[in-house]
Image 1 (cartoon, rainbow, N blue to C red):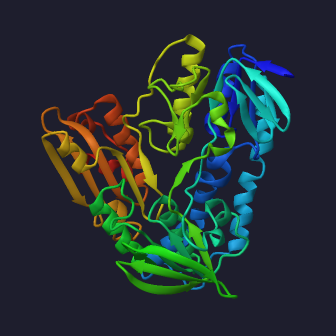
Image 2 (cartoon, one colour):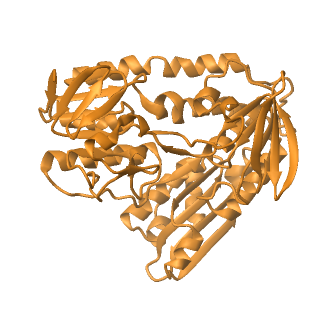
Length: 450
């Protein structure tokens, strides 16, 4: 064994980097390893580049909404190649910058695939390393699809690296990836179909608002096929013929590209976790509430690598990594607090949620007040020409506290953060309405929503 450490972190995404830096700051000898460029999914292959591409779609959509209201959108279009160059201007420097930052903080950076060879040992490209502790934060990978022709699909990483945008695209699955990419591609002129095996897409969001979003998507050319399975994907020389199955009835679609948006699973299969006696499944490592492996006390996990109650979000992964690191350093058993953490689907307009769904709140026996508002005619949406916007705020009648908030509309991805703060701090609606916001802003709508 060539080297021994206090901590080795597997995975150089935002969670892994947060843990490595925190533990190195305590004087620990720390190493981090990843077979891919440093930065992880969020910075390189997910959240950040996706929202850069979305900016192009926002410009197109905003101009179209203002047609006849002082803006002539004729001739406005997305140059996909230039938009991709803009994306690369952000993503390309990330790996070198992140690795340099780790080195400055005293973290040793390793490259290559890692696999366990014992309870406290890993192998990286033939070199063995030992450590008192390991944090696994290797993220997620597209869920395997048992469909003939599945090898012809590209994943979200492939979509975000397309040099040219095909004119016809089919997305498999009705989740974040499919809806966000479809809303971008539709504004860039592509013809879109989302195929979802369930009846209700975006299952983690308020169903009433999801239906409004689906209708808004249909207006700009995003077609949704519900309760439909992909039977086969076959190349036909120019693209692909996709056979669909809805309740036993077969149909075919010709398309230029098929994108996997049907969910992700923990990316752990290559780590040889069995050699370390670590129990795991597709949702991640089996961990205690304080994020320590239930079967190997030397191993901890965070983010998509940990089977926890936390949502699969980068901020959640970072929170878990910091909590796990603090527990390692202090010998404590603190559990992460998942309350008040918002999430958003960055379609146009965006759909956001924090706290409980209405059905979840009722199942818990909460005496609910539901403030359901059609905000499409409110000033902040009239100003930009948006005609699809709504809010649903859930309030516990006995405490006057917000227990859930669900928003669909321009800039509501920012507004949801205030509702998240209210839930985290236990603020009442009286307290929320007592604050005075800058006007006219989207934030000033909050008082009317509650």
